[in-house]
Image 1 (cartoon, one colour):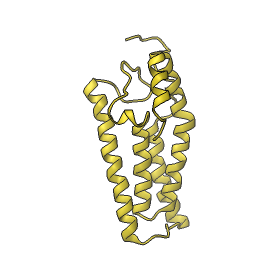
Image 2: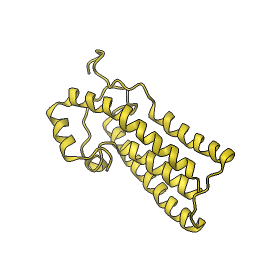
Image 3: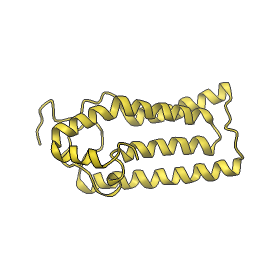
Image 4: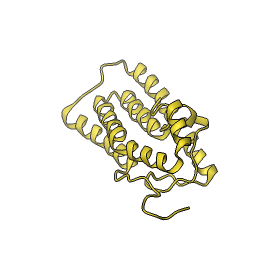
Length: 157
């Protein structure tokens, strides 16, 4: 494994911090400004619960692939392997997708429109400021293999 300056994605944003900050900010906004989602509670809890459960399954499956391969998870670290199987066959970013599902599911389950809005804002940050440098790094690191993967697998879903 190379230790040169180019053997890692140049990501200056820590996605879990952005995600948890979005949840906290959405909660705080509702405390001070209101913002209830207009939906029957039982339906909201059921729909939100399905999204929450799906997010947990997705993130555990995606992280397990890293653990089984002995790879590191932080986005600013070098990659030794390109993941293209399992959940990575359907999404190039299943962990970020799981974060979005969890945030939206939590917002729906708690009828908090602000958590949904701030989670979607976090998704925009990921899409424009986190994923592009990761993709540029993977293209440099894995060349044609990553290009082929990118053509057959969507960024999100």
